[in-house]
Image (cartoon, rainbow, N blue to C red; front, side, top):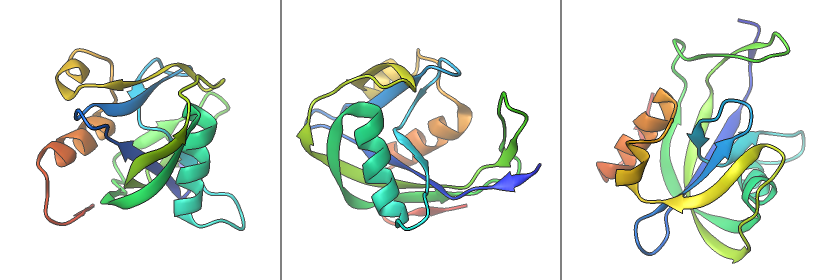
Length: 142
């Protein structure tokens, strides 16, 4: 392992309970929009920026689902970087924009939770979806 990078993602739910997901062009998995912080921004600003870049939608942060830092979750990138998970997942809601696909995704749409059971989703994202479904009174810290 050679890096630990602070990243964030947005769990955005529409009025019908469907969740904003993007199908990643690198892995083919469905995931929340998000990415890593840049110098000079807060993690909340990062998540808002990344969501806009990856989905075309403007969001505002509405809460915290959890902090995900499992040292057993290792991500290996094609350029040889090996990174330990460090993700804070925020709840967000749409305040503008139009859904579009970016160069990081092949599809972007709101998907009902039942449909997600049949789609390719990484285990760490499934954990976050489970925590969302549980309607936890406090954020997950792990």
